[in-house]
Amino acid sequence: MYILIAGGGKVGYHLAEELLNENHEVLVIEQDGGRAMQIRDELGGNVLTGDACEATTLDLGGISRADLVAAVTGDDEDNLVICDIARYRGVGRTIARINNPRNELLFRKRGIETTISATQAVLAQIEQELPTQMMIPLLQLHSGLELVEIKLPETSPVAGRSVREVLLPAESLISLIVDPGGVPRMPSGDTRLNAGDALVVVSRKESLDMLREQLIGSTHGLDT
Image (tube, rainbow, N blue to C red):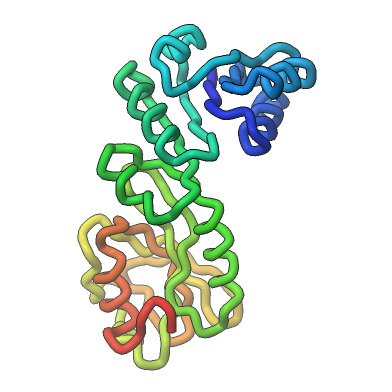
């Protein structure tokens, strides 16, 4: 793959380093001349000095043949602009770093589905360590889908029912069930759900509130 990385800070540098080690063709676009020179010395010339928010800079970087553009600068507004230009230039995939989680909805409204938030990643890790947490975000997938883990409490309205008896929101799927002993099961329509089970579910982000109410119950919130 040919990958353009906008932003040569720590995130962009280490991302480029790993991708080069995996034999991808990579170009880092960095606005600061001194930093660009340092990257050039360490990564063997895979860097372009310029402002990635400028379409002319992206054109010089060969955006017309890029398979993916990763906007990982420290400025959310810049990352949004870079992804917008990339999509306008016909790039099939864009990934944006989000520094302020509150901006995630704005990115999604602009059609940028794949976003990375360090704050959300750390929060998700913390939530996994909380024994009372009922819904844990695991992974953001393409096209607005998310992978979540849902622990069924004793009061779950679906406890004792089979998978086929559970009405889930549209485009939602139970992909894995882990019992309280840690044993995973691939569910079928006849698989019975029990209190204490952890369900790995794929669902749309906008359906998560409904999903939580259907599987956990209205008395349990996200932060309980």
